[in-house]
Image 1 (tube, one colour):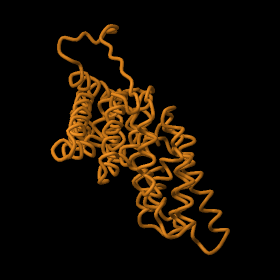
Image 2 (cartoon, rainbow, N blue to C red):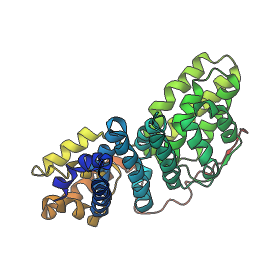
Image 3 (tube, rainbow, N blue to C red):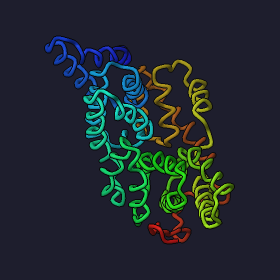
Image 4 (cartoon, rainbow, N blue to C red):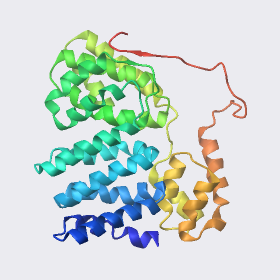
Amino acid sequence: VVPQVLAYVDVILELHGDKGEPVRAAARNAISELVDLLPPTVMECYLLPVLYDIMENGKWQAKVAAVKLLAEISKNEPELIANCLADIIESISLCMHEIKTEVSDAAKESMRVIGGVVGNPDIQPLMDDLIHTMAVPSELENVIQKLEATTFVADVTRAALAILVPLLVRALSIRSSVTTRRTVIIIRNLMEMVRSANDVEVFAPMLLPWLDRMIETASFPEIRNLSQMAKDILEKKRVGAIKMDDEEIEGLVRREIPEAEFVVPMLVKLIKQRQFNNKKWEKVLSFECLEKRLWVIEFFKKRDKDLYTEEGVDDTEDDLCNCEFSLGYGGML
């Protein structure tokens, strides 16, 4: 039933702009009931892309409905929204700059709710400033100054990077040596606190070209050196990231489960996120009555282990002495 119902999500959202209040009320109830039925993997692969498209191309009433729906989902599925925050921000930022005030106001309010999934105590006090800067780019330099004064002591996750990296990239395009210096210091301090190589890998393509540019063209030697330091720690932190792209993983899934169709994108997500919980896989496979193929999880577990276990390392024991400690101290290095 789920695949068939998902085909009508865009229609239901567009009905939020119907002239009749009974129709609009029915549309609100329908989308709420539908979301309650969907597990996170289905939302990520099938619902969120529809919402992104609506936020870019839909009627204004549908855009308002889409951004409000994202805020509601963030309350019930914060982990899902955190993992997808980069794409969400890209789409919701478009709505923030809509001429129609109903859309821009709804986008800003929803982003304040969604920002709660970041959960970083160092960044959370600045969340209102960060969201305001998304809507009013002229305030960016003031926010960069506040970020430079921030001491990062908590782990920096993908969600935190999703909020900060687009703003940092924009700051590097400003022709100000003071702002550039502050920004590369922030990047270095942030990278020090990222644990996941996969999280770094997502944002490295956005940051590296700008850091390379600063290394080569910055007027002041100090900025060139700071940029090199930021690049070095970024490159170090991305070591061990995912070694397979979506197309390669999808090819393996289709080879091992040739009868699968609807569940393929969801299995790709689970494999990329290195989630091999039997219950999660069984839930996904059940959408196409493929529970008997649960044995395939062992194939991907073994492949994952072969890819990510270092040679000469016994992964059955905890390594208690191979630890690194670091803090990102504001503008101090």
